[in-house]
Length: 182
Image 1 (cartoon, rainbow, N blue to C red):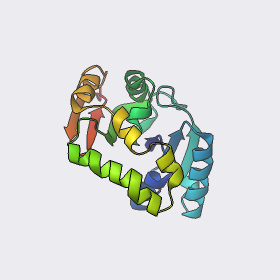
Image 2 (cartoon, rainbow, N blue to C red):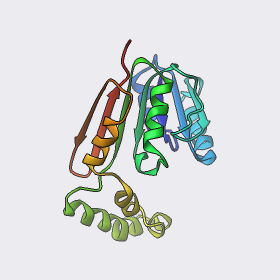
Image 3 (cartoon, helix red, strand yellow):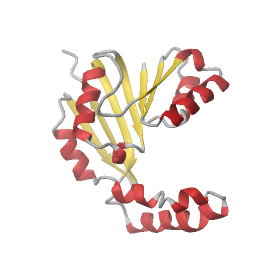
Image 4 (cartoon, helix red, strand yellow):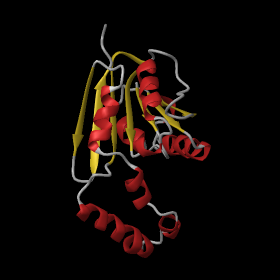
């Protein structure tokens, strides 16, 4: 099973479902509208029978203990109200040996990346007709509220996971951890 925390409209789970036919798909999002949209998308892609979507937040997943194999989350870490509690919750729902992969923006990125985000927000999104996104201050607000690589390393060090790694790239970071098998 793969759980997508902060699944939004289900695009990532849809791609995973197409590539991994034997895997059960679970999406969790705090917004009921996203859960409804994700269900509709999965049905339209022929994956509705394998997918289960639930409303919930990262720090209180509506899932049973030791019931999941893999948790993924993209571009939502900076939205979690309590990342340490969320990571403890991930540990609770994973089976022994289960893994987590989190990808998010990183606040300590190169200045060039900030300028590219500003360009996207102020010019490209307006040209594409995404004015509501631009008016909300996105994507710059997400970048500014994201964590640095060192902050995520500190988070990783405070988790109950047996192994963890944090890798920084130009504008984003990856955080991986595995629950001990024993």
